[in-house]
Length: 149
Ligand code: CA2
Image 1 (cartoon, rainbow, N blue to C red):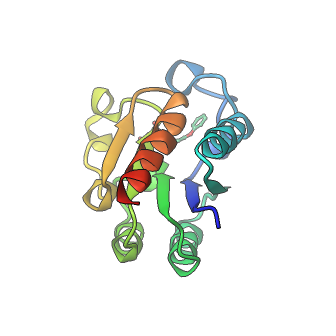
Image 2: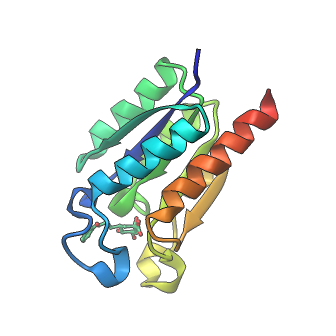
């Protein structure tokens, strides 16, 4: 049976492609989902792709990934990156690799974006590659999972 990965997206990423194109580019979340599905298929991985504006919903989906024995999880926690101990605690429960991704280079931006709680549970962090970072995250996760076989 194919391994399945979860790709979770946090608040306001539903608006991707509609505002602040200089920071986030012009791709929509639907475009990102398409890119992720293609990249996952190229690596023979199943994929669950979701977005929510609600912290508890993201926690529930991380718990679901654990219950469903997902092979790995990629998360763009967006605005919850620097605030959510609940998301961090849920990620700590996972026994599979977590990759944190940000479209923009958060370290080049305002200081309040720098201190990620999520990074404490992440195997790797990708930021600053625009939405292409999602494809890099899936390829990196696939390599990690292959290396374990
Ligand atoms: O660069 C990223 O991917 C971020 O996670 C995006 C978050 C921001 O709070 C993080 O510091 C970095 C914001 C997501 C908001 O998404 C928007 C999409 C379109 C237009 C405006 C905001």
